[in-house]
Amino acid sequence: MLARLTLVAALLAATTSGAGNGPLPFALGGAFELTDQYNQRRSQIDPDGHGQLLFFGYANCPGICSVAMPMMAEAVDRLKEEGRTVTPVMITVDPERDQPGTMGTPLAKYHADFVGLTGTEAELRTAYDAFSVEKELAYVDPEYGPVYTHGSFVYLLSAEGKVLTLVPPILTSDRVVELARKYLPEDTR
Image (cartoon, helix red, strand yellow):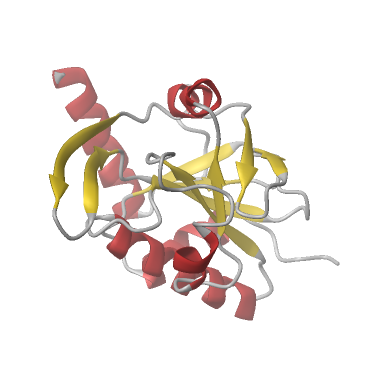
């Protein structure tokens, strides 16, 4: 646990101080294949060749998701204005409720281009393990239903699905844009 806290502290220091463009000092990310809100299969590779902001959460989350996903949407719009197209992506931690056909509308409230991904427990476990994401049912709220604790980092991915850096969800969209500029080239198409 102490090693994990030290790692998180180092990542926060690097992301908030503007340190380096180098790769992360540990293995993170990997292949997955899940189903989007349109019932299409999708992997970690962006089919349109765009960078990605990836978050693990759920479409109707009353907690950290309601902070991270609007921040991602703002950053995506600002990056687009600069000529950097980035796709906002959420992998669900609540596959019972986040299904094709049900998660599109709540995600579109954040951004029209938001991609929601779900799958079987085994498919999702592959993604959770690749990105070191843990989830646990915290309690059942009478209004919102199941409320989960889950990883809260936003992952900046290349078009090929490689993790470029981690973004704490408490950063402003301005800071996320600054970080993304270091890693993502301007669109050439």
